[in-house]
Image 1 (cartoon, helix red, strand yellow):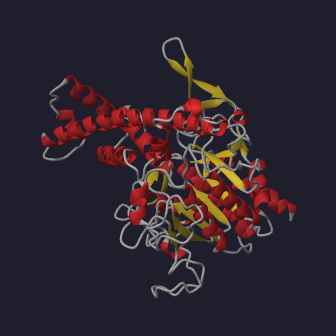
Image 2 (cartoon, rainbow, N blue to C red):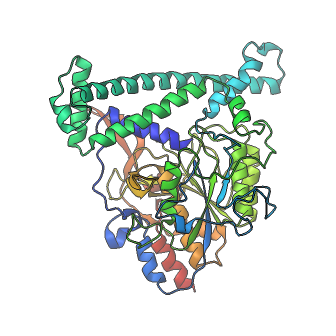
Image 3 (cartoon, rainbow, N blue to C red):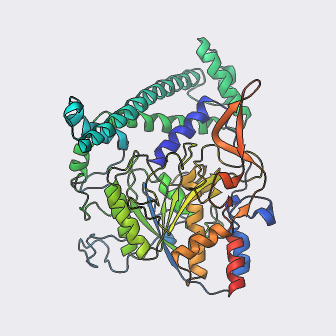
Length: 533
């Protein structure tokens, strides 16, 4: 799941390398315009100037995520309410199969508990296939069985490799945690700049960590943020390691009560759309539709939406049946835009997700998906869910989104962002995005294609509000047609070449890194659409 993987990778690089320096950003930069503001936002504020006084209609946007705080001060008034349900009566009033689904649905909950942590998909498949193939004789297999056996061997290889990497990272994070505790012990229980400066190291490792973290603070990192990221990263990785070592299907059966192997099941879960860890979903929801100009927090992208909250993504990899059911629930209950800030690299039940994508396409619903945070070329190694269906169909209602930062230059693509000349449509604001999170903090900066995707989902919602005659395919095409181009080469995320003294970034033009060759810009799209009226 991208939300967990991005947390781990971003937290890890933040703490270990000590070179991540937050930009001095405006809290609203995602809404600014490259031409008017010299900031590579999505042009939302300029678009609203063009649309001032024009009629619009409310659009329902589904947020399929880990959970969302529907009581947040900047979200509670824009949360979707099911008009066909009577709250709390324990009856499926609208007969859609979901009891008391007032603000959406939770496919990860049971009667008395919630799924919070899950294994990765390769771990689930490894444990499932190991029983059948660990002692199998490939010489006795027919071609079809041999193909499946080879798939098992590949999954086994990936799983064992990632397990070793996770174990090593956990040891490193544990070492860091121990260092933080040493500093706090010498500093009245506090980890701060002064305490780090005065810390008396006991080992060479302590000296290296002290030097690196002091440098990180010099670059602008706050000690409390470093400690918070370390705590979150250690907890997430500890649980990932733990759940990857067991067969989590048994936990799923006990907690949710469904059969994980029955992909035809649709009616399970509960109506707790927040779940146990709603930070990621709350941040995503705020980017799309946080109330604008209310002197609280920040402005969402869309000014007249209702956010339908669907919980289907755990800390770990999501299950295909849950995503398929989440998409179908959103479509059946009126969503016209669906944001999907998650993903994985194995999809054993892809066909059930493909069917849901076809269903959304038939009902004129736009699907917006974050490309992922592994600095990968999606053309070479695609993630799931995907617009490319097993039957060769390319979903015309799909937008795949990479992440960019606010200012022009060779490093303007997020260094973590996935990309792809034939698979990623464009890039959108995804670095240091200020948005809502649960109390007591309420608002923070977060980075990831998880933030770029809702930036685009909000843009799509804006167009659906003011140009309701546009269908899903037309909206996708106009956004690709009206991107902000960029003529200079930029650093390719994660790609380097050998230099004289050190490795150097590989640079390419944007049309080599995405389909449209640019950055999403709704101001440009609105100008074009108004000119056609």
